[in-house]
Image (tube, rainbow, N blue to C red; front, top):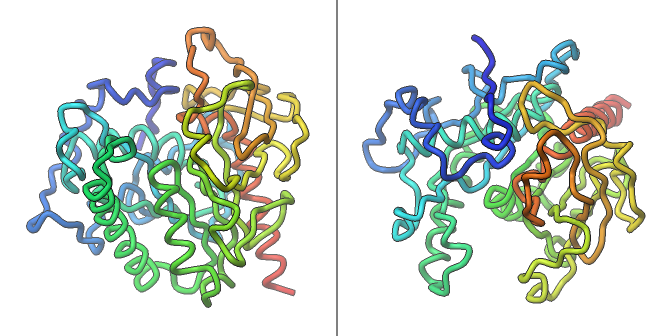
Length: 343
């Protein structure tokens, strides 16, 4: 099947939360849930699954000569794609909403989950994600219920994955934004201090803070080839301090995605091997990286038309800006894990 690419730079980099371009893909999602919940025995309820073609299988054109070796799995939890203001009173997305499923698959699954496909079988469950408004509302009871429902789906998907698909294979847990929030909890409840920890290659908890005291034994990755640890970062333009930072009482754990260390040294953009802002184009040396105050900072990224992007919050580019470095780091950690297992 022909791989998918989008012609518009801005639509791709911003993942275009308000665009109706996903309407064209809605007909690919005709399934309906009989009870409103997911059925993970059916492929329809997986945004990415190795038993079907989906956008996570796509490989950017400059990377298609890579030799693939999917010795491990990744359980990837996608970020919030339920964002329309007209749905703000609806706490959770419907699992069979064709527009949201199309938007999920042709934004985050294509541009984020695909970073793992050189080394991993990609599993990404659909879930009744909380509407983006739940991150900002003062109605904490309602928002907590929304996130609990989302996590209940993810927990069920992970248990189904372990029982039916994993077959004792090594695995990675990864997520971005709302997906990272869910992945953080999943790691704490199912992996840390449990037998599954012996099969964890690494975790990539991106776009969401991991407080330094959240885990008792699971550590932040501080070396490029380290395994059984987690990587995490949130990306902003150098000099910007997001308003919510003053409410964080514990400094978040951060790994620099260019050096894969945890120090505060500035890492030159020359070490950035390639960002993906148009899917089939690799933009080298686009962003540098420095850890400060629990955040990752970069100077304004460089690629065609980047002067149009005025935001100082690079949340949507947490993965895209460091795409090839992440892809190569996954390979390094997987190789190290396999070597250690065969000794």
